Image (cartoon, rainbow, N blue to C red; front, side, top):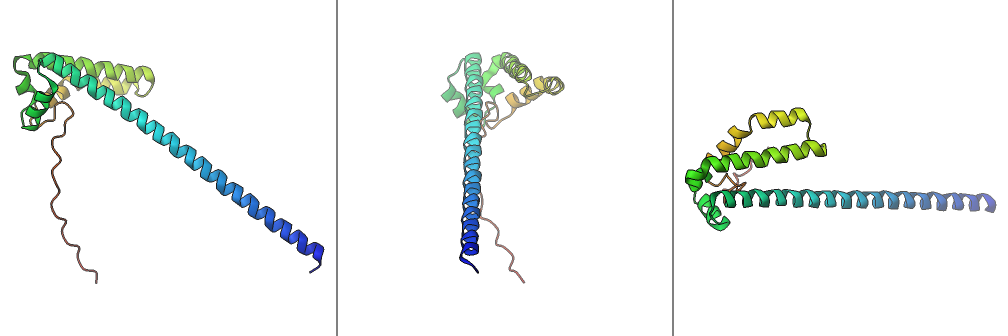
Length: 160
């Protein structure tokens, strides 16, 4: 091979490798940007969720008139919000329905829920909230109760 052809082959190889490296770096940069955007969206969603939970908890505390720590302790002990609220149960249900209705209306206004979806959610809202308030074992304030350890996993069957 002549030296001119060899130089041309080397130049083409260097150019191809350089372009390949740029493509990989560009793809990695786009992946990193996408990941950062995803992480930011996740953090914003978590902050909004935590804010909604705190507002709902404050509403329950204000309606029942008992501090949050006492409510959480009683829920963890297996009592329902209905039992804890006592004579204020109906007021609590009404306040929680109004809270959820406002949340649904905000989602429709923000465009994250359709009017049809909102209508469907509102149709069962009072029954759903009443069920949650009456549920024993800490299901009333979004509290899922203590995490219980899982039992031992069954042994895997031997492979033939």
